[in-house]
Length: 316
Image 1 (cartoon, rainbow, N blue to C red):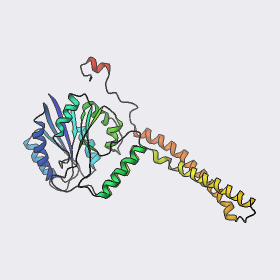
Image 2 (cartoon, rainbow, N blue to C red):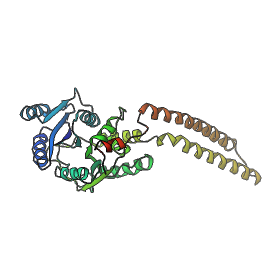
Image 3 (cartoon, helix red, strand yellow):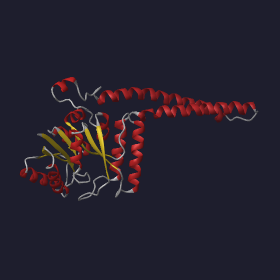
């Protein structure tokens, strides 16, 4: 029997955890798997840790990690992935906004349909402030124009993955992680399930606009080096301005109009700005190479091999 590890990052979720544990336990009974909970307490200030201790004492399927302070959801998610022992690995939020019943469909997608990952995306943003929704849509448009891989609009961390895909994600060594981009970058055969947004089962969201903005900016910085090309775009704008003022000076002089010293100097100043920005762009290209090298991602990832097939592990 395969083991399913359910990873649950938690921050001040004392009200939600008992409801989550009960609901997921009942749902997974319908699957032919051995269940393992991996709760990660991200430095909670409420009774999240005592609640997890109580669950672990009463159920050996419950495992937990408790951070020394709040390191953020990405750190909690990474720690959970490292701790998970399952053949199948699922990531869920404790607030039950991720519908547990979809675990059944996810399992079917992997075991019967041959997918490596079944993820979820929200089809709407009900019960979310309009400003936050607008910025979220803008974020997905920007990052998908700049990044090398597509990040599905409305994609959640809620998903179920095979052990091979989980290990591929763990093989990415960067410290500043943006999981949505990592899930996309490793590739593998992925199916998407859609569902309408749900309210939290209890408690309040820990994500305010400031935290979401910081998370989005960090995600763009980690997912793409396109921002380094801003200097090149600015350089060409200054070059165009330089040519424009040169042409203007020539035309005015030909017409016998007075041309001030400042008007004559402007093309020179714009050309100097162009040269400086072009130099910065060249430097940024080397910074890009350093960034890619230091990030240390593997050159390639293998989904299946002949050895797997001969060992009976190949997937049609």
